[in-house]
Length: 260
Image 1 (cartoon, helix red, strand yellow):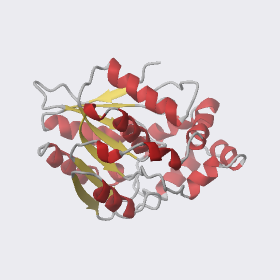
Image 2 (cartoon, rainbow, N blue to C red):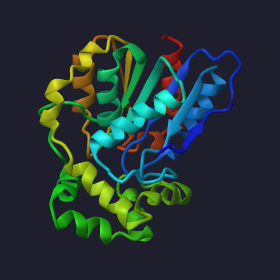
Image 3 (cartoon, rainbow, N blue to C red):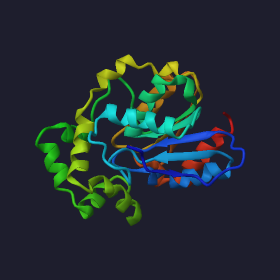
Image 4 (cartoon, rainbow, N blue to C red):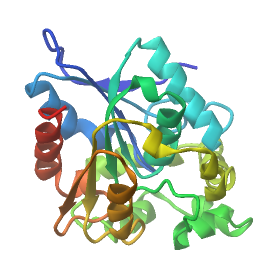
């Protein structure tokens, strides 16, 4: 089932391709500023809506493995070849797993406010979503206003258009159940079989300083464990750092691209 995607304006003789993978409960809309910035810098960029998020149809399954397979199929269908992979939140767990399976396709990595460690721990909301009964109550009880209030406890300045775009993940019963399947479909321990250091490519670790879900200690761990890291911590940025500080994040990614 093809994914709906957002892309930058066409670039003549692009310097390369940037593939952006969004987190939960966002969509490709989170990359809107970055797509424009990298195109201005001479790069082609594309950002799919994962199955059941944004405008992409639900795939019949919301599992971690389903999303990795959907990303792989999207990459092949679009004939993207070697890419700079940009990931955030669950996009990291999905995209970095794909990167480990296809290290020859990775020109560089941009990793933001995520995790990829076998000894990782679920934060409080994730634990709730993983708990039978409690997760159902959480996703079923959220209307648009409640969803907006929840997001704005993390990113107070999130605008109404962003809320509407991200709330599409709650647009049907099956999409809401897909969210629960995503959180319940795997354990961090499964990452023991993936060696991110085997992706021998430059990596920008770009992190919101005040993230309550993926603390900045994770950024420093990525910097220690990756072979070619650069670390940027965005002061005052929180979990949705590309929404919180779009100009700063876009500038940092563009500067990194000039080095790869």
